[in-house]
Length: 326
Image (cartoon, rainbow, N blue to C red; front, side, top):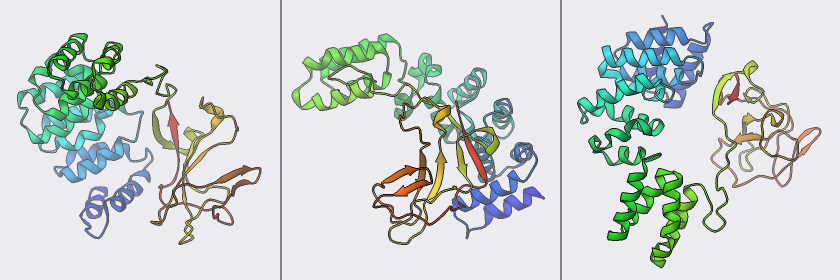
């Protein structure tokens, strides 16, 4: 039975966490739906938080089952409170009604340690849901997480507190709020900040989205959210073999692993070369600080960088996968 097989893997003390994840994944992907249905059922049946956590982390990789994830989280909270913490990785794409239910669970007992990681994760992705109840949140880390998008009145209060107490923590909180009102407040405070604090406030302004000297954008607004999917679902390939020579460790000669190759024709990255960039991972313990390669019609050519003689497969990423970017 799949349940027993996964239990045996997770109970095997000779395996590292990464090895357990890989072996659990190998078992699940062998099923027609890549084990999604089996995974959902196993989490509902288990009382072991370790098992539920591994399986939840696996489910988190699938972007098209948000409804099923939301149902699962609700089920766990209503019927299996002892393993609630295992749902942390499923939090980020929950619908508003489920998010509000989880927050209400937390408010009933803010000292519940099993809920802390879940609520902290909610605060990271849904800070606006906490603004009206911020006075009921005592934890400093959660308070910090829910600052983004805070109302203008909080900006006014922080400015007033800084002018009265010269507390640089107020400047940091203004940076975390990341609204136009908060950014304007930081800029207006520059002449009032002691010289020794200027480095901090300039960093906070840049963290808020603009360069302090030019007021130009300090962030790249063209960005994507990535989901690991099957090879045929995206042109951005992960794992499998790389059809060209790859960089190798200058000490052990171990080939680097191709993690991801982006298809620039499908992205607006502003790259002028037209070549698809690839990302490599050195697993030898002697990774160089940087590498030099040249794109040619025959693939990559190392420049002062040792390369393999031909294509190399990878066992770091299980199977031939891809990264879907939205």
